[in-house]
Length: 197
Ligand SMILES: C[S@@+](CC[C@H](N)C(=O)[O-])C[C@H]1O[C@@H](n2cnc3c(N)ncnc32)[C@H](O)[C@@H]1O
Image (cartoon, rainbow, N blue to C red; front, top):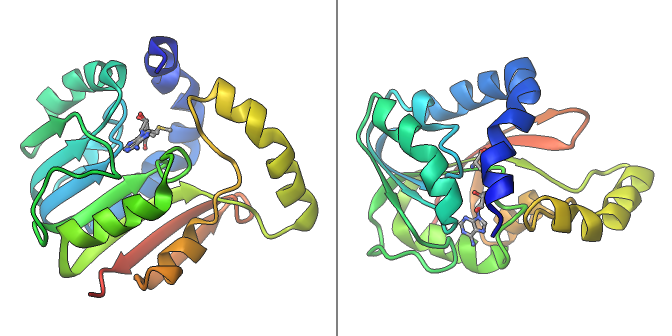
């Protein structure tokens, strides 16, 4: 787990955040209500967008990322606790959270199937599951390029895969998708969904 990646993450993301992602995060996180769990909170980019939540529990396995997120945690409008844990093994009881949030995370989680099962377990029945992710594209040429680039990309970007089919996974695990928006063709997807149990 590299500290260079954690320290440079906000700098390299800044142009995209300013151009589009800030607006997407704002819209997505306006739906985060009650007790919220955020998976893979990284440098805490989402923290300033929580306005309607009662409290946020953020899990993040990388200590360097947690360190970078502390200033944003202190400035947040709602109470935020950051816990060092992985999405595949969440240290919480079943049906604990009203909302689960994951942004740009399912590309990096080593076992996304296990993480989805864990997310479903700790989210209350009927709870919101809010995601913003980059995924494998439909265009055959671009999808092939994503496959080709993934091994190198994973090394440069701390385990990030370009070829994850996150929408298919959610559907497979019976999560009810209520709204999808696509950006940069269909490279990035905004997803509002509901936990069916
Ligand atoms: C690309 S960063 C995204 C950070 C942030 N969520 C955002 O929107 O900018 C991916 C994050 O997922 C975290 N991560 C990696 N494996 C994970 C796992 N198994 N469970 C939870 N988070 C994980 C990484 O440490 C990193 O902070």
